[in-house]
Image 1 (cartoon, rainbow, N blue to C red):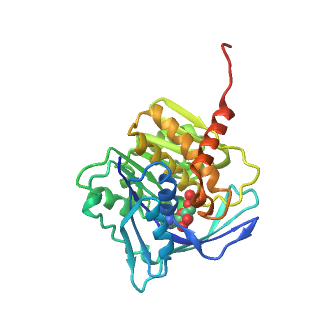
Image 2: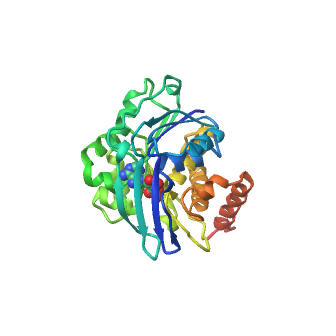
Image 3: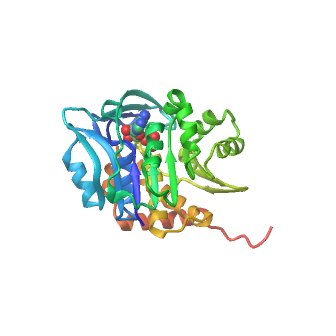
Length: 307
Ligand code: AMP
């Protein structure tokens, strides 16, 4: 089933305790599209880049089955640029630079051929633009998943709250959940955030896994313990791409199937952090994904007949 992906396609410059990059390919929608392409060949991208953006990456997305008709290339303008630096523990980072460039006046035009999409993934982007995308769809998709970040909570909280009312699933990290709700307990935070709109809430906890809240139910998926985390940039987006890609592939949006989707999202994210930027997920082989799913299964499998 078809999947519409909206978000930043960008240049990033990243500094981790393991090294530093110049401008490399980044952006929420880049990671989401790459991750989702392992599950569905029916994804369609809406994003904007400047004339400085490499055609080779766009060609790569197309080769992976991503429709790029909705990717605008602005002549004479520069692509969105983000730069971040990770602390020694890799769990926290500082944003050093956010240059909106083409994102500043992005008008998300939805091609007619995208109108039938059943799944919508709103990657990290100005909340007002995320909302505009929903309003421009002639038919509401079967499932709308949204990601956001602290940056928008600080500069566009009202817009963010309005957009939240329109989505089914929100994915955010633990720090952001606490900031948005004003609650330290993630259980209390989840209850407050779900009152803001989304029926399902996924709280990502980095190396401590992810929680899915719905109704009175909670599901926990661990993160795979890795010997080395090289660069966590894009892990959240890769997770989201795997999550929605799996749902779009299976066409089943039940809570039970969302549990499986979270495992696939976590498996994709575990690859993302092994190299800088998109490097690892670009080269990922289907076989490697299957092995990792097996590793997840073993990680949480135990035989306990009764207590
Ligand atoms: P994550 O590590 O999952 O939070 O995602 C990092 C990606 O988000 C980077 O590739 C950035 O280009 C992108 N990003 C960072 N800040 C923003 C922002 N304000 N709006 C849109 N995308 C952003």
